[in-house]
Amino acid sequence: MRANMQPVIPSYINKKRNVVRLVLYTALYAELFINIYQPFNSRQWIAGVSDWGYFLTATLAVLVAMLIVALSRTIMYHHAKRHDINYWEYGTWVLAEIVLMAACYTAAPFIALPDKRNELQMFSLFGDAVTYTAFILLIPYAITMMAFILQEQNRKLVQYGLREAKNKETLGLEEMLNFRDEKGELKLSIRPDSLFYIESADNYVNIHYLNAGKIQHFMLRNQLRRIDEMFAKHDLIRCHRSYIVSFGRVRVLKRTDEGLMVDFDYEGVPLIPVSRTYSARVMDRFSRDSGIL
Image: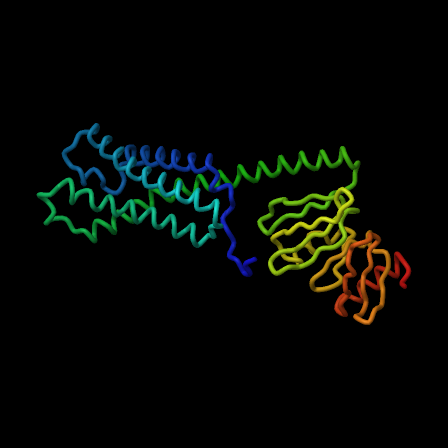
């Protein structure tokens, strides 16, 4: 378990379908933009060619770019299956794509026009190529990313609505406890009367609940503080810096040599300590709803 891990990019960015859409949309945008607007005085670079010649040259440049993007995204797709990619790594990856394309565009005139090599200024060409490539590439990247985000949010809303409707059909109006990770993705949904306690584990929480007559455990990447805020209106109570307990499953409070402990109504669930910081809150809640042993 890695502590203080940097936030990683959403998994849907590297879905095969979205990778293909990114490549195709970027190619279409670049082809139309270059041929319609002829930006950056590109007509002067290849002066003397016909409109058809300009179109073929622009198309060849776009094909080179898309081959690089397709290869890069294929490598990223397989890499993401084994390792998380954080935002810094993703940004560096995109920058590497731009630099590689610019290097190809800089090398092209040196290869295609050997008679004019002495007239060409490599560093100036490379700087211009980086600027123009970044401008043309980042716009469709940004648009496709926003489209992916909106699509994913719509999908989550639909799934959440279907899940809530199904829960209400099964459980009447009883509300489920929906546990989400730090990115807001729903990972676990359980009945409130199934939960015993939630335990902090660095950047994760360990959820202990009853399922099919057995005590189950589920690791969720999130912080206990955020879980406490998320379920502030539910029958859960913070009793320790490392624990939240489901008050509906608490049988008694016990004073032991180790201090105040929470005892549950199910055999096999360990006693949970109550720290001094939270003891007043727990005692007040318990005194209102139960007796103290």
